[in-house]
Image (tube, rainbow, N blue to C red; front, side, top):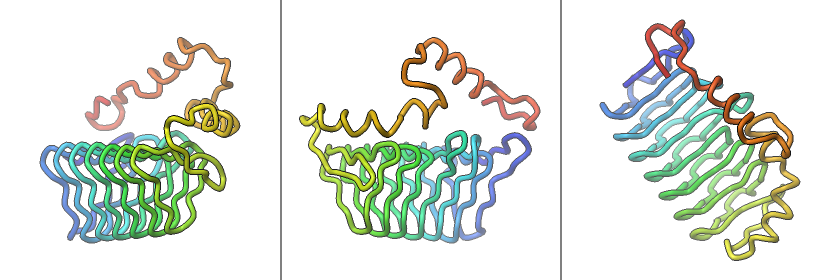
Amino acid sequence: MIVDHAGVSPRIDPSASVAASAVVSGDVTLGPGTRILHGAVVSGEQGPVTLGADVLVMENAVVKSRSGHACTIGDAVMVGPHAHISGASIGAECFIATGASVFPTARLGDGCEVRIGGVVQVGSLLEAGTTVPIGWVAVGHPARLLSPDRHEEIWRIQKELNFPGVLYGVERATPMRQIMREQSELHAPRRESGGDQG
């Protein structure tokens, strides 16, 4: 389904395709030969999303911008099933495996791999050709690769990356009730967008 959002229509190269049960919404550009498979969502409702040539977004993956954070994906990138990329920059020829997560302001150089269930945290930088092992976390600028059992080390680095400020524009001590009220407003249906209800 191709959806206009807030008066902005996706721009889709004639050689690209979007499966019938996928959603491409808002300020999205799909390059030549790009494929958006069933159940995937590519959302440019909070800013631009640009996918290069021959990008494959597999089933039930989510690729989106965040408020103030565009999402760009280079040529020849695979985004695996159930992967999540939000407001990040992905270089060419990267492999984002099943269930991987790449958070806002993260940057991946060309040829990186984020293997099954891997995470690239907010503001982290992966140099070209870096591989995040299965289930591991990349955190920092430049990123350190840490296994999930090293939570305290991950947290020492992650807390300096200001996750709540980057994602929600708030201080860490902001009450969850306030954050969710603001997020609810941000994601409210926009009737002025020509019938799009969220």
